[in-house]
Figure 1 (spheres, helix red, strand yellow):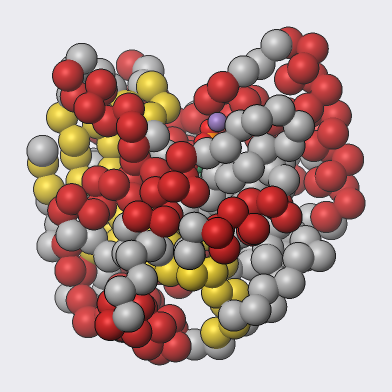
Figure 2: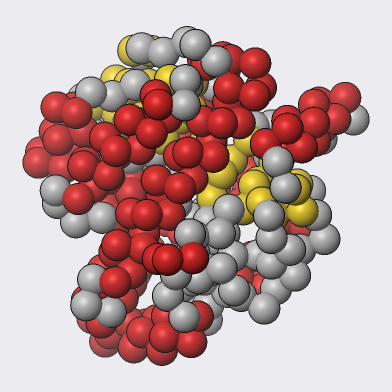
Length: 289
Ligand code: PSU
Ligand code: MN
């Protein structure tokens, strides 16, 4: 394992969004922009991925490009041992990145949207289980709109994941701040996030503090539009027989196509917005450089 950051000052970032969630070269470019934002706030970016069976915490641009150009498998936490044993290139989802962050002692992790409960057929992301196991701060713009959001929020409750809205009492739906689902915990400052996290340690809540951060207003896409494109994308997925871990990247790329790239731009902007908040939390947790 290669660790290029001081865990106490670091914010970890995933690579599935780089290699599978966003098209080339937007994935790598966005990752670099997120890293600059994190550095700008005085924290250390730690992009996580696996190259030739070696875990890298704090990937360099060339290494991210290798994931994209040589090809890599999308892995969750349970596939980490397999990727290492088989010397694979692997991009890490929320669950895999959280697990690696935990191993090295990183307390803040930033993503775009967590995985969750899919609609229709049984398909539940490992992200939810991992969120229940690792006490760290996770910043996300809610969960992807392609999911069954209501059920996802209920499962988060069942798993004792502490879900707080950042300046909102609504669970954000990724591309839009609205979902119609209300949250019962809201914070208005980064200091409150840190305060809650400290109490979680004291009362031994073992899972994550999931801070849901709505997409900035100027990039928001109406919930109804996204729902319409999602239905269309789901029909295409059905028609092409897309299954398993291909589902999320397929739906995201179709929705981007139907929206003339609007959702793609929204995705990039919410990632940057989350990086900004994550870095502030890391610094407030006492790890500023
Ligand atoms: N958010 C994005 N794009 C993505 C993902 C999240 O904006 O590509 C990825 C994350 O890595 C998340 C994964 O962990 O999708 C969930 O995939 P699945 O539903 O197959 O568990
Ligand atoms: Mn799945």
